[in-house]
Image (cartoon, rainbow, N blue to C red; front, side, top):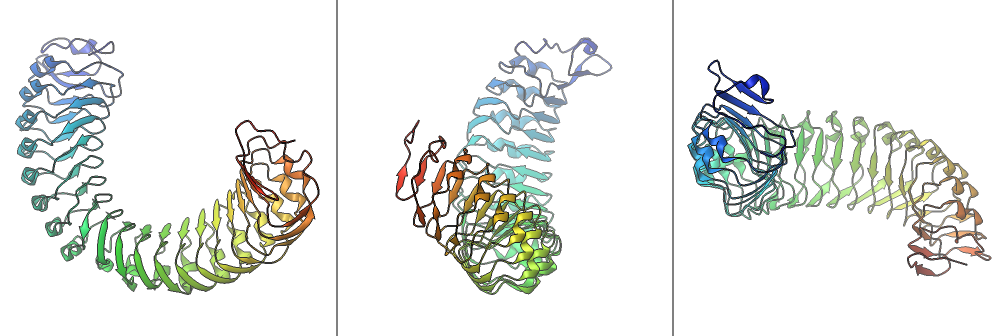
Length: 501
């Protein structure tokens, strides 16, 4: 088994062999060499160790085939060959391991079909075949594994339908079929799995509506149906009172979101983005006090921002972009002091940016571009020392850029383009030496071309066009050797290894 392994005999002194366990008769009953760099292939001779109850060769840099001789290991209760570089098909003879309770073949390059014989393992409780290249369909025979509590077939190339027989696995707690090409509907039989705590069917090309029987899965902690082609209305969310993670994003769900979502008091992650949902934002969101991630972007929500949104003080990510939300931004949203990311871009918001947003001391990403906001950047933004991305493009900001912007020392991306910002270009921007992209085009700034741009040596994108700058560039731009795009008076894509006189 390569340079890192010793020769294993059926009988011998285990005290000198790392990773081996023997019984009182000196017979090898367990091999655990996980996370040991063995290299090479798995020797056929392991199949002669008929007293083995545990074989763990996970993450050992092994390659080659799974030996057919493993069919003789009928005492085996655990077989873990995960995270290696095994290839070929999976021996159907593994279905002879009648005492197997845990099978993990994940994270290799196994291909072909999943052997139907794996449905003949009467004591199996855990099966993980994820992150391989299995194709064909999910065997109907897996429905016979009536002791199974966890099934993971994710990240393969499985096609066909989700077999109805999966609904017979009534002891299942966790099922993950994500990232396959199943291209079928969700079988209503999944509603029989009333012990489920986690159901992940994301990225499976599933079609049709969500079966009403799924509302019987009231013990779910995590439900992920994202990145499919599901349609119709949303499932009745109030039924899932124990949910902490709900992701229905990137589908074609239509209609409104009922106020029942506000009753999911344990919810921490809610993503309904990239659907065709409409109406006002759901009532009762403010009651979900544990919510840390809220993404309702890329829908057709309208109306004002909910008054109780300011009660979600655990939020770290708030994304309402690409809707038709109107009205002003409440100053009370400054209560959300744990925010790392806020995105209200591409809506119909008006009024000013609240000064209270200067209290977002953890904020990394801020985007309110493509709205109708006016006024200026609040001076209080000077306190956002962690901020990396500041996007306020395409609004109606109409005052000068405050010198206090110099305090945003972590900024890598600043876009204030397509506004009515006037006055001079503040010298304070020379302090923002981490800037990679600076876009101020289409404003009304009026001054000589700012020589202090030369201090921003990390810039790869610079657009200052359509303002009222005058005077020569001189050596200002020549120091910006990483520029890939330059637009000052006119626009230029910069060639590699350029120099500017």
